[in-house]
Amino acid sequence: MSDSKEKRFSDLSDSSFLIQLAYPALQELGLDVERIVSECKISTQLLRDRTARFPHAAQVQFWRVLEEVSGDRNIGLHLANVVPVYRGQVLEYLFLSSPNFGDGLRRAQNYQRLVTDAMQFELHVDGDEARVVLNFCGDGEPELRHRDECFVRFLQRYFEAVTDGAFVAREINLSHDAQGDIGEYQRYFNCPVHFGAAEQSLVFSSEILSTPSSHAEPDLLKLHEKVASKQLERLSRQDVVGEVKQVIAEVLELGQPSLESVAERLGMNERVLRSRLTEAGTSFNQVLADYRCVLAKRLLSRTDESIADVVYLTGFSEPSTFYRAFKRWTGLTPIEYRQQKQQKQQSSQTDKA
Image 1 (tube, helix red, strand yellow):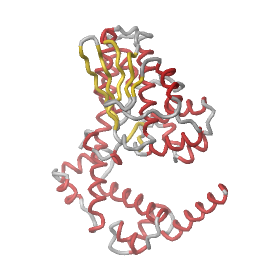
Image 2 (cartoon, rainbow, N blue to C red):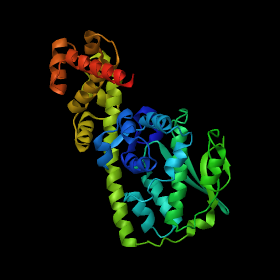
Image 3 (cartoon, rainbow, N blue to C red):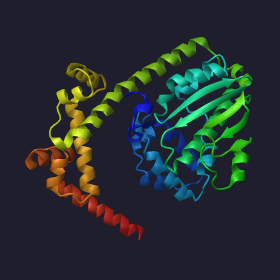
Image 4 (cartoon, rainbow, N blue to C red):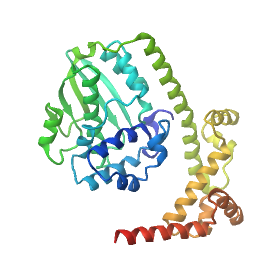
């Protein structure tokens, strides 16, 4: 299940690097960053920790809020135009230290998951024409057209930068219909833009693939590839945690999931699962407790489910056991937690009014 194509949309994740890339650009555009951070529930960790990940599904809310705050129907395009091209990310160094542009592209393909699970790019070469095709997940969400336009425009700017201006797009293909000011697309991409296309892609001359990198350095390339490989291994180790959570979600109402029963559903030996969770820096009991805690908080704060139903839905056999566990997790009883959340919601509604 490590391949993003086999994952559910809700299980996909992005690197916090994307938020850290966007943050100064939002400020440069003069947007209400505090409101955006608040409404999108962007944590301090996401703004500071480059190893953190966040659910890709959160992008739907992110772009919805951005369009609302900015009043800009082309916000993805405009954000991409001011995002810093270089931010010291390992994929940047891989590109720059590769012998040429084509080699950099092919190497980046191997490590694109370090940026996001939800997009895979492919390089196609046909005679004198080359295409970088971007395969996005979740294209059914209308807000994600901003994400797609932002990615495509940013990649165009990035390709121009790493080739010292040699990269020139012949055309841009976008799978969604045109929105907002159509002339804006032409001005920003500076080439023909096709909407409702069968793919999202950047089309360019295949000769550009042989453009040498002015920063090519074989020894540094080996070092950067080693760092990228280690980061990818660490990310792969985290996959098992998501797989375990998915099984827990499916069986929790039936009672207390066990390491043995979850391992069996995943088609692996109990000892192997325990070992893989240890490598990911956790344990089965910790994953189960974390999942129960998040689920209980969500049920108490966002639904009217009775405490008895919350006990059942989180897989506890006795209310007293649930109460003790919840108090250990939050320092509050379930009733106190619900009341606290209700008070905050009422206060927030009053402030908006």
